[in-house]
Amino acid sequence: MQSIEKYCGELEDFLEGDFETDTDSLEWVASGVSVYTERLATALKASKNSHNPQIRPIWEKLFYFSKWVLRHPESVADEEVRGTILFAVVQVYQAIEWGLI
Image 1 (tube, helix red, strand yellow):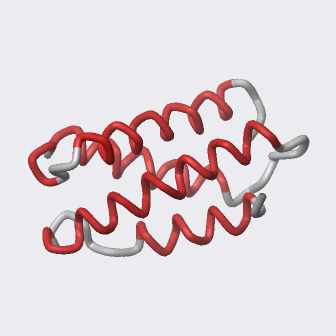
Image 2 (cartoon, rainbow, N blue to C red):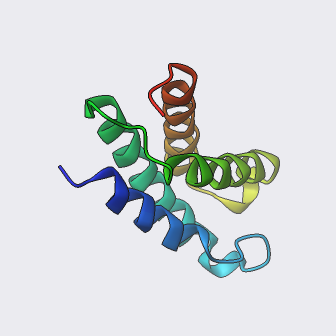
């Protein structure tokens, strides 16, 4: 399993784009975010020591992205991608609430 730091870096790369104005790449961004958020959430659950300073800023960006996707559901046509993003964000949020992060 890859490290939490690697998943954070990959998510950061996907979230750097201006998804609010570039609709051509939004599906690509959403797909990447869904994959890496799910992997990060899985890594967090498996990690014995997930107190990592990279995670909270990434989660804040993910939360903003997921709220944007919820407000503009037509922008991400693939329901499975939307669902994966939202489910994974909830998993990361739970890890924060449980004190894992």
